[in-house]
Length: 419
Ligand code: PLP
Image 1: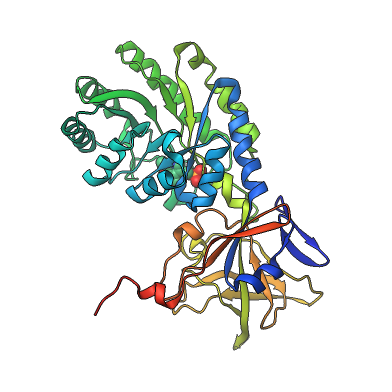
Image 2: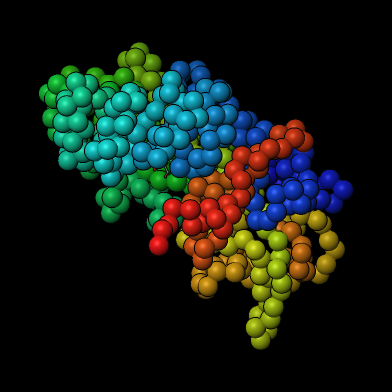
């Protein structure tokens, strides 16, 4: 069972709060998060990197709810952002004085201007064109923009192809062999300050080996930069640590072990005044969240059994997009026989499923099911497809809960449209 989720009187609780009670209070479907779990995981990073003075920039895309951001900033996390919208959220959540790293291949000039004005800690550059655009925007604003080059080391992270980012086949970063040349160019631009080196090879990495490969590569690049008399003040090792999705491939590294590995691997940077930064997302919020959905009905198509629920791929797209596995637990434990069933949503797509041929206790209309490990890339990837309003989000801690996002209404759905 995930930390801070347990059954009390046969009812599943999140951080001491009954999910059955929440369903009555906020309706279904809804996301519930354990704040204790989020804070423990984030603190494991913050404390784990303390021996080397490392910094944790939470990857906002994993779950960008304002309250969660605010809680993370309060315990010393910074932010890793990839859009003007994420910058807006970070500033709104009180992150104006935390380290902010701006990554992403498609930064527009409007986004760059906003980030310069917000004095972000670093732009992670992903192309020559982007370097030149940032230089010219900074120059126009009489500013000096701090940059790191995000290098693409051509390392296979051995994860799902859609979340692998460190191969030349992926759109991300600057190819390793072009990196030094780009640093030379950046060094001579007056409106640019060379500040760091960055890399992120992918997400849901479950073993130590690809991380080690990428860190070795980065350390070698730092050495080469030194030879060129280019000094940096930070090394950004990206995010990517995996979680347990109950698919038989649990992450083999705890956050503490991951941080120990980082500390050991980067010891040599201590006397060079280079701060290590990392950008974890999934490993902080993933296991802390659940999507609770209600069974609408069950049906048989021939001999095939379906459990039709009120949540759908627009609420949690990971199973449809990555064929990913989420454990499904009954909110109220029952002794019903276990049968193989497809858990599907109401959306008009055959890809709208949460599980296929999953053996679950036979459910009935009105039963609540909890899709576990849904705290990352769940709510933040939600859409309104099939004109389904975005669902409510609830944050729980020590038996107390608060709604941190209201369920949208049909009026909200059409609020920006005109005819
Ligand atoms: N940093 C960058 C640049 C990313 O693209 C991502 C996600 O893909 C992350 C950090 C966070 O990764 P994760 O949630 O796997 O820790």
